Image (tube, rainbow, N blue to C red; front, side, top):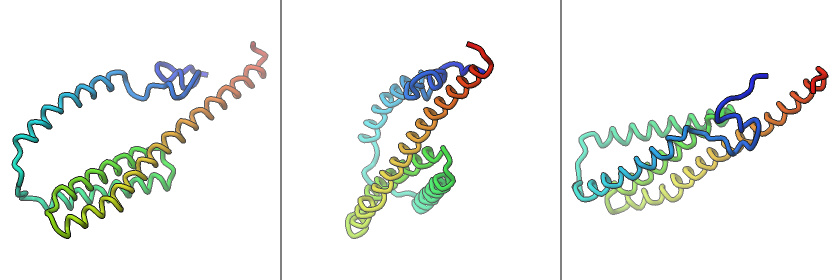
Amino acid sequence: MQEPVGEFTSAVDGDVTSVKTVPGWVGPVFALLALATIPWVAFLAVTLPRHATFAHYRGVWVGFDAALVGVLALTGYSGWRGRPWVALAATAAATMLLVDAWFDVMTTPLGYGLLLSIALAILVELPLAAICLWIALHAEMVIANRLVILRRRARRTEARSVRGTGRR
């Protein structure tokens, strides 16, 4: 039996939760990216106009909502078929739903439209985003549990094969 190498050795030999899921540079680089973005946000807060007109406003929203339909459909399909990448699709869907709720509320003028946007955010988009995040977390837990089961099976199989060959 070929031995696993690198960071994944602990998934077979030890605790599955101790396995690094990404290279070590990801944490520091993305922390620095987050810090580097703070001045940009402050700059935008001071320099952007309070009101703007968009030449392609309809296209932006139709395109975004069409992409949201696609990501929701992908989440449904991958969940229905039991695909492990359902977590990625559900995370993308949750992100898009949160962005949709934010921009719906923030770009709608005062009046009935704003009340409708707030109601849709509270009653539909935010709860659905929470469900999508639950799906993603649940899928990750299922995958981790499967790894534990596979590790146990591998150990039992190896123990049987060692006993069967008379090796010690």
